[in-house]
Length: 178
Image (tube, rainbow, N blue to C red; front, side, top):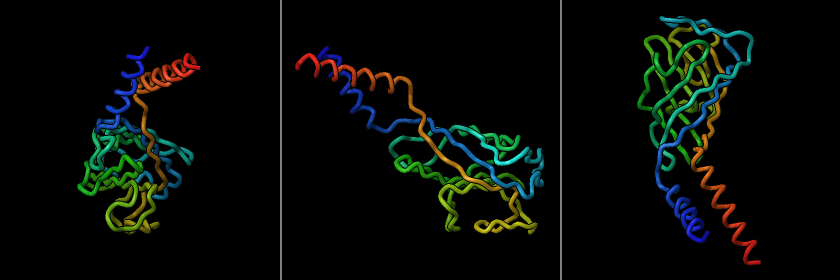
């Protein structure tokens, strides 16, 4: 039992090291004034709003920086496959703050306050070049859709199991001492 408690404590220390973690990305589209927009391959497609779209990405759990393995479909468009990351994209795992700019030939999806435009931290929008109303107040292009987003870490099953086992071992040890 003592060896198990030591192993669980060691795992806890190892978990503090940098490692890739999966995150859940939820985008809530609250308004789509110019959907379907002029997206070349497929138009944005929304039914009644608001709608929540879920995707995932991978990032380092201890170091701010870029993300990988983005999987996100919004309004029928696979954003990860049809848009490319811009250098302005960044993720902070300590605060779960995401700033993402994804660009295609004729549209962009922006999450958070990208650059110096002053958008709210949880702001989500798809814009296209043009001056159709409404023009986005932060990114100065025609809005296809607008909403909010949130990021949540997805616990790794093995980490949850070891944490629970370590906690149980400590409780059993404490109980046997008393």
